[in-house]
Image 1 (cartoon, rainbow, N blue to C red):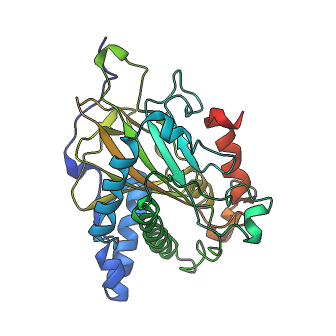
Image 2: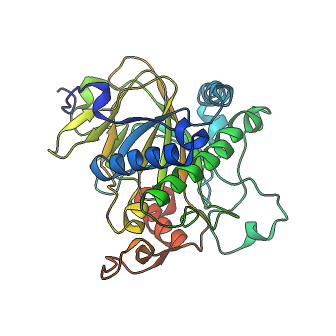
Amino acid sequence: MGYAESKTIAVEEIPVIDFGGFLKGTPEESMQVAQEIRKAAEEVGFFYIRNHGIPESVITEAHRASQSFFSQSQDSKQKIKINSSHHGFLSVGEAKMESAENIDLKESFVWGLDLPDDHPSVNSENPFLGRNQWPRELPQFRDSVYPFFTEGIECGKKVMRAFAMSMGIDPQAFVRQMKEPIARSSIIYYPPQSRELGRSQFGVAPHTDYGCLTLLWQDQVGGLEVQNHQGEWVTAHPIEGTLVVNVGDLLMRWSNDVFRSTPHRVINRQSCERYSMVVAWDPDFDTLIDPSIVCAEQESALYPPIRCGEYVLSRFDASFSYRN
């Protein structure tokens, strides 16, 4: 039985945007980049950014640490098994997309904002700010991967400012509440996938991301696929020096459905291991996701306001077996 079918497309069919013009350009150049981002978000929901501002050394070090982490024994990794704050190790079988037939064929390690034990928010009702779990067997691991998270948070803020500018609203509108963001970062390992596993087994099954924004670094193995307007699955090629950015369901809601949250999936079709690293960008738990802020006069909001954390948590409960 063969793999699920997909179509190989030219690299440029998913927009590649030079974000350096937004970071360092004139106001006119920044607005031009913002409009490019809006066009990509409206038409595709996915795009690449180069000159994104995350140092290459940060990415290289985090990738190296990822390889070291996943090469440990299962017993070692299970010592920091995922907890109720969604921090820690998920083995194969602990993640399944909401409508998928099968579990995802991947391992991952997740962490969030690193707060001290005595921080009041660690014991608050906010379930995303519990303590991180770091592997004792790898004493340098935390320092190797955490900068990817912090740099990703800052990069995501700038992309969200570009989104706001493109819609003609205050550039700070989407990023005002970032004191204790519920953003998560993860490193992900995909084993080689045999063709005999068939058409319904995926590294990550078809899904849309449920938060605001996803920033993805992927190695050169490939495997990410995006669904286009025609319903075809097309390749999202690895491109050196870029991050993949995609709109999540919560940002689509916040934009009053102007931006698209596009289905995507991962199939590791190669005979080697695949690694990726993600920052799932979301603001503070209590941030009010209110689409009326983008509405013009006489335009109605399509959704009622909802707190960011409540929405994300509801989606977590449907996707991760450990929560049940």
